[in-house]
Amino acid sequence: MAARQMAVLAAALCALPALVSALSVQGRAGAAQAQTPPDAQERFEELSSGGWDNSSLSGPGSRPELCKPYPALADFFLRWIGNHRDEVQSMVEVSAGHWPTGWQRFVEWPDIDYTGVDLLDDVVAADKKYLAEHGKGGLRSMAFQQGDMLLDASLPRADLLFTKDTLIHFPNKYIQQFLNNTVLQCPPKYKYVMFVHDSRPRDQANNDINRFGEFHGLQLKNPPFNLKVSTRFKWTASLDGKTRVVQVLRPEKYCGDTPPTVDLDALEAHERERERRRKVRARKAHEAELNAEMPASATDEAEETAKASEPY
Ligand SMILES: *[C@@H]1O[C@H](CO)[C@@H](O)[C@H](O)[C@H]1NC(C)=O
Ligand SMILES: *[C@@H]1O[C@H](CO)[C@@H](O)[C@H](O)[C@H]1NC(C)=O
Image 1: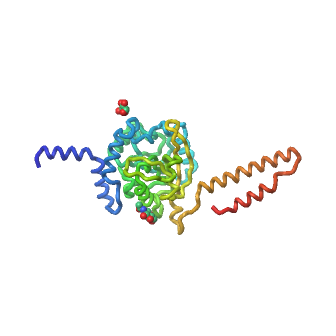
Image 2: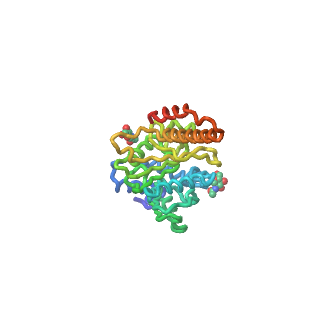
Image 3: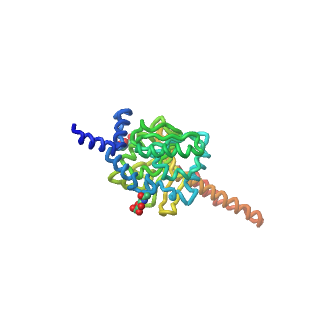
């Protein structure tokens, strides 16, 4: 081979580090599972070199301003971890994205073990450099590694799997593949899976996209996914006025004899309504007592009992 051709080949290989590393990952993990297609890897490379947003290399969804009004998402996350401290000691974030320009810098991280996984070697290298320069903050440990969301063997285990603004760039078929192979694995690989992404009213139908890197908002509760997630948090960013949700899934519920059928959001809304009615009754009773009149009406009680026995 002529020297000139060698140089061209070398240049071509250097331009595609993610593709090359992805092939080696597939070699290690076996070819049983399809991985992110090479053209999609290239697309993500282009986009994360500023094609999405040159001030937030992992895309506009990672811009710290989108977590405003502060301390919305970061605050919710800390509260959630606090409430699940007994069960959640470690987390894996896929894709971790570009920390040096991302939202994560502004989170007051709890003392758990964190592993950030990203498809792109350049991003992993930048994150490792960030760690070397800034330290692990409040985290007990912090590590970054290359991995592919569509190659389960490349994703480490943890108590919590966290994925923010990633599935919005995957066609539905590949979202389902990630759900099947990683999220809904039995016995469960993760105790909890937390999804964070755009979910505007027009996104509720999960309209598909044609290519990796395009954008669609999602509602994982709805077809074709039908996941029994619980919506723990919802916020509208002041920067772009878009609504985003945090939905949590307990994969172990899918490992029983029958998959779960309860709509957790509906159940919770029902419980909130019961609690509201209980408070109204208590207030009425109190007022009645003060006015030395009849106590709270029996109709409320009857209605309440009827509601409570509705199947969820
Ligand atoms: C980002 O893109 C904008 C508009 O395309 C450009 O004006 C700006 O100089 C770019 N910033 C960087 C840091 O590349
Ligand atoms: C996911 O699993 C379901 C149920 O087993 C199956 O019907 C579907 O074809 C799978 N989809 C993908 C993309 O793996």
